[in-house]
Image 1 (tube, rainbow, N blue to C red):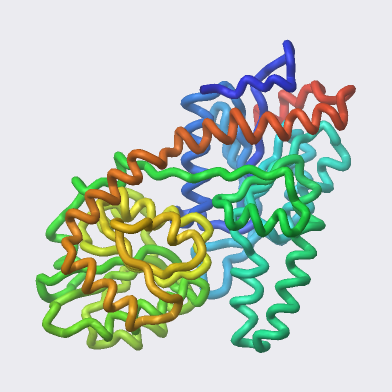
Image 2 (cartoon, rainbow, N blue to C red):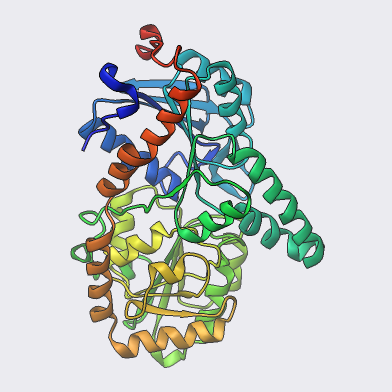
Length: 420
């Protein structure tokens, strides 16, 4: 389905949609980079629209490929996560927005760049603004990160201030989507009510049990022939990656299990040292999605200790690859792993996680994994995600923008800008 924007009436024409993200990994991996890549493919193959994607990069650079414009803004790498960059040069972002004059801006990060979009809309009120509230960041990134540093009471106070920022920021947007009902409820408590839920998708042709390769374990130098556990994501405190190593220590040695932790982050080096002598591999950040799909399909159980998962694309990819999931009963994990598709336990309880791994292995990981794949095939696809975005969420934002600035709504953007 293509976007037929009723708000635009008889003058309906291809849109210029802009994706704006402050932090991401330019080499693959991560939920936002997957989203941007899948959205680009959808727009170019299924719609008449133009797509401008503004992201951090090693230098200022614009690449135009037909209806797709990829604008990189020079940004430093993130300390401890060198594959990620973070834009601080908001003036350059505002310059790009003024040059291209998008019909609609979708902001994907909660930090500073939403205000670049808001400022642009103040200059050009016909611009529709959509925000993806992809993480309940006052809880996930403020309270949980600050609690070990300043104590729970002060961390709660900082979370309260962050929710104030959330209300101030997201009420400026014409429409906001969350990845689940829990985050939508959090926004409602902040008096942000123009909201929708946008379930994400997974490429089930890429992430497929058929990609299983028995040689994968040996390539990693892992001994034995018992079950292979796998985690894919950032190896840092937010993801609680250290809990996985502690969980693995609690598995019985005669299980002959091994663990592979695919990814990078500030905890990787210390965990490599902590896991010395254990059959645990740290192959690093995987830039090739096909190799990641092979890694997942070649394992037996997916494990994650992440307590603040807002949607869980990595979990869906593991399920599409035919894996049961052992995780924690927090965040979006219960929605991703209903009964029969794995086991969930208390947050930070590594003994319970080890027990759940053994239970899944006892119950038959292949049968559970087959049910998990069927669950994903039935409910999650990128086509459904972007159909909903373009036919439900965007039209609401465009209608609000049209009512705000009807006289200027159909101003044409610069053809010279689109031509690069």
